[in-house]
Length: 402
Image (cartoon, rainbow, N blue to C red; front, side, top):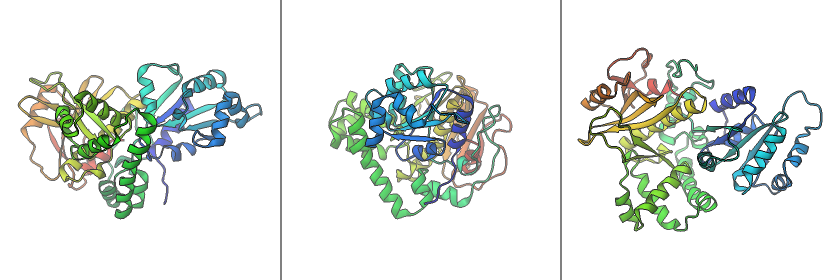
């Protein structure tokens, strides 16, 4: 299988060039974290390797000996630690290594969502790292491998290759199926990945014992991508409590199986405030064409929002709009506390609905787009100037993201 450069090569290169803090790389299983990070490392330590585990257990001094930091070197070496979160004392290990040798070594750590989880609770690593979220390939990443202009943030439009766009739509953005582009391989790969999530990640990282019921929840959620979650209905179907369903959905989100977005209610009359929408992180697993289209766009927007946040371009949030009369807009991207642009997703319809226009008037978003999946590319900037609702091709709009 061929390998190609990722935008995360540029992210890591910039980080290592300008920051002494550790780079923590979090992302879904098989998204390419290890492959990308090894391109930037002088030393690779994998907790799952018995020999490497013994080195880690001997402490930071053993790592320093492996890196030969007692010898004169032309550059500061980069140490990569993979699956280190499985070590119960991983935070203490990294703290000791960083505090003692921060000026002599640069550190990259890859791992699961547990890296995100520990960040939320406030820990001893605070101030010692920057967290980066790695996502599957996107339309923009098939075109651009450099970082966007921090002043403009969105890119200039560029036409994606027809084969790349089709491969993303059919096979998803995870590197192996996207690059291989074989239907039989993709089906087997997606099935195996879900099984590994349930039988390995859940087992290793959670206390959940009811794997058969969790497996049923995963199956039900696969048919609900792009829909509001009614926890009480799921609880009845699976025969567990509502609180259990909430915990399990949160767990699946932390393990990058899917993600939740909440309604934006500021300046929205009679808005919903609690009901989240659920999306799979792998749109290729969504059978319904309409739901796949919304999930496809949602995953691209999440990648952009996470990337812009990680790069320090501002404070961004992905939400949706819905009122009690059931008027809805699929997505709202919020920038520094104010709606920046709204997105309604369609497969082929080009007539703009009243909901998009009405919500743009209410929340005062500068941009509102009706993104059409099967429309031909148009070589024009979606963000050229603020204006009312605009019908734009997905090929154009997504090429301007991350």
